[in-house]
Length: 178
Image (tube, rainbow, N blue to C red; front, side):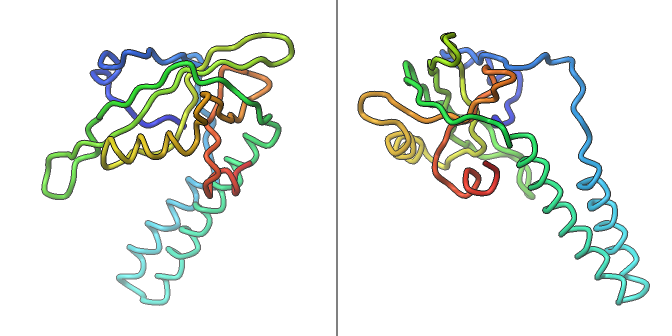
């Protein structure tokens, strides 16, 4: 997953994003997560009338989390781990989501341009990553950890669509989803 960006952010990047899907394709609904969200809300509102019904919100929350985890794991189940060469990297700041008092803070993120070979074909990709950072120095520390001095990094690659890649970072997401 790539960080959500506003259209104005796209023009600020020197490295242009390499899309891996058609922007007009429909996204499959995660029915378990949707049902969990409805149960969560129902439990909260019903709990105001009858205290014992608050437990429905707990069941909904667990269903949302488990369904999201299982969906992510199922989607990535056959992805392959490949060694890639990072040929360029860029850090940039984006606006975060608005806070409770309005306004939004500056978050830092990065974009990588990587090359790898799969089944005899050379691919150039901009791998996804799922979080932002509070400072540019933290982004750089993170990148120094996951990209070797000679520019090597590890990617998860969807063999059905090799342009769809995610950076392997050795964090909890890699452990749980792959």
